[in-house]
Length: 159
Ligand code: 4NP
Image (cartoon, rainbow, N blue to C red; front, top):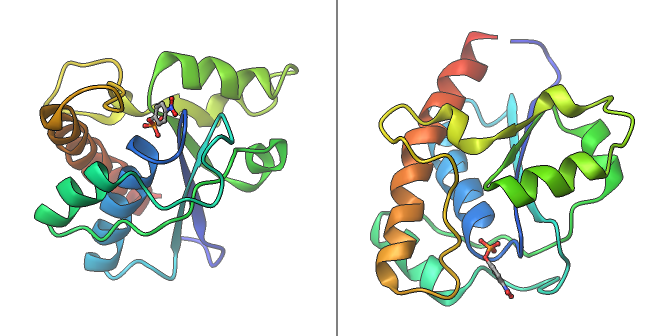
């Protein structure tokens, strides 16, 4: 791995459910692997509706039950992020399309990827938005995130 940290950005719509959970799950795996100096994790939303807020209480609760402390503050993704980050993972197809729309020339499209491409134990193509549903939706999010993040880490650690 090079000296400069490898930077991963997780992106969803509001940055209060899926992507902050992805950030927390991935950070925990990175810390456990002793790689926190060489891998930097962040998350953002394609919309800025919840700017400055903690993750949704239901997401924090579900994360806590699995040992993850979700404490990031919501922010909207910005064009500079496409330059800064080495890998940008979209939770669903809308997020992917909106991210790629920030880069009409397509200079960064190769590093903007669907998160579910990294899942090895699940066939879902998207991480479903849990915001308007029940508690099982938050568990599903964590199931997918634990699967995909473990693989993201394996791929990065090989670089
Ligand atoms: P997220 O979920 O994109 O996973 O953070 C949502 C959060 C908020 C809203 C929709 C989805 N909302 O409509 O405010």
